[in-house]
Amino acid sequence: MQIDVLTIFPEMLQGYLEQSMMKRASEMGAVTFNYINPRDFTTDVHHCTDDRPYGGGPGMVMKPEPLFAAIESIRRPESRVIYLSPQGHPFKQARAEALVNSAHLILLCGHYEGVDERVIETLVDEEISIGDYVLTNGALAAAVVIDAVVRLIPGVLGGGADATAQESFSSGILDHPHYTRPVEFRGMQVPEVLLSGNHAAINAWRLQQATKKTQRVRPDLL
Ligand code: 9D3
Image 1 (spheres, rainbow, N blue to C red):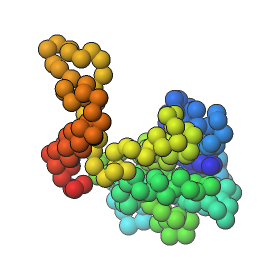
Image 2 (image 1 turned 180 degrees about the vertical axis):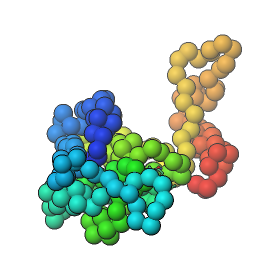
Image 3 (image 1 turned 60 degrees about the vertical axis):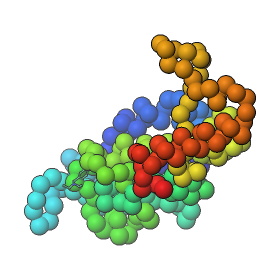
């Protein structure tokens, strides 16, 4: 899988994508990350990527010319162009599971107030938001989407073929509590059932705990 990120602040993403699991994924050849700076596709002397909004109002808007030039220079028939913006579809695990089947993702990070609407109408296949809160720009959102997708590429996550099969959100509810040694810590005990060796009882307890937690914190999932 190839992932090209269009951003005027590539360093914001590089720091994250060059560590840990994302680094491992690119080292094993499961994914290739490229960074494309729209500034490199400007033709004016000051290399302007933004301009004032028609109709007035605060902030600046990313100009269409550098974004069209940048995207048209890298896009192929199999490319999927995703624009990260607060106006996008809320990002869910199901989208990550669908996107992992793409050969080429182009992630366009919003900066300033957003991008010229003609870019969205003409070049963007899908607009994604990572949640209902306000970020300063789309770079962190791109890192979130990339992380969620790349860890699903077979072999990237350690722990065998179905390491992602048992996890929270795949089952539709939150995870159960976890314990490790010591069996008593500052007077707090590990629940007896987990020491029993009775796997049917352990699974029943975990499902009950997960359901209670989901009811309490995320009733919308039930
Ligand atoms: C006043 C209107 N604001 C839109 C809600 C302006 C605005 C705020 C923040 C415009 C851009 C941004 C920068 N955010 C993103 O680019 C972004 C984002 C986000 O802020 N929240 C959740 N998901 C995303 S994806 C990209």
